[in-house]
Amino acid sequence: MGMTGPSGIGKSILLKALADILPHQGEIFLGEIESQMIPAPQWRRKVALLPAESQWWCDTVGEHFKIFDETLFGQLGFEQKVMGWQISHLSSGEKQRLACIRLLINQPEALLLDEPTANLDKDNQANLESLISDYQKKYQIPVIWISHDKAQLERVCQQLLVLNKENYKLRPLTGAQL
Image (tube, rainbow, N blue to C red):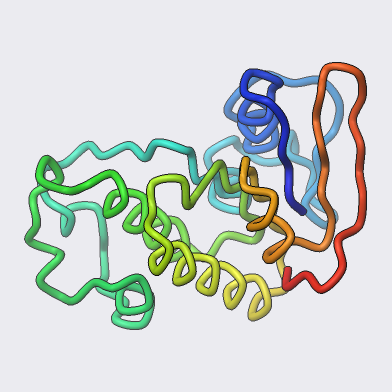
């Protein structure tokens, strides 16, 4: 499902609540599992959030990964040598592509994507869209994708939730991949 709307309407806050990062009311389920039935860190491994700005806590790329998955890294344009790269020297687009790989390596059961391609050029945007689509199809998982790019959402989503101050609108999209 795609989600769009003006900045500040609460899209990112909703994703953080779904990931059990922010306090929320109501119930959130992944299949039969309710978010409050398991510890928050375990829920977050199942329901993974890719924030608009990724966080990095070690000096090199390799320190953030237990393994080098040649397929995942290769699909987003990286070779083994990326593992030695300094985080401080990465572009915002490189950080975002690597954050997506880091997320998928943990094999989450649902994806919450907050503007995952905002910092990418067209080729890398297409590569990341393809990677997410392949992952979603392979594991048959739900995906919520936030973007201000409605053309992108029409490419990658079956439904679109439009948030605005007056009301929320959910409409189906035709020809969608996810």
